[in-house]
Image: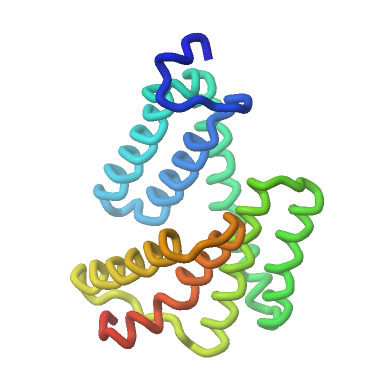
Length: 200
């Protein structure tokens, strides 16, 4: 950073590419793709991409080239996801739940063994929590039916946010364990709680 006294944050690693811009581009493109019939999807998706990306410049933690690099990588990953999701889904639908569950444990473990770091461990915790929660939800049919109206969606979201708040700010523990708990809450616990509270 050329003028660290200007920046609100002080990074301790290389800035290229911007990870935040990369994730924002990925999520924004995926949102727009799956809700492409809605004008709201374009507004929300583009606003999210631009706000997150320009916050990196405003905070002084990235140069414009870092953000541009994040956009390019994020867009490439989003396109890879869009074009490979359906073939992978078709392949996995033919496999047993135990095979899919084992795969959801082994692939993240392999990534952690190849790239051992705290950041990767944080992501792996999320992957394991999501895999376990999804397996149990499918096995015991704990998932919710589709929303019938926007009020139902708001009620479910409020319950999910309250549960995430509890996990993030009340439960102590190392970051990988917290990421595991957050993913488990999202993929497993939120649906039964919504059902109990009649937010279905």
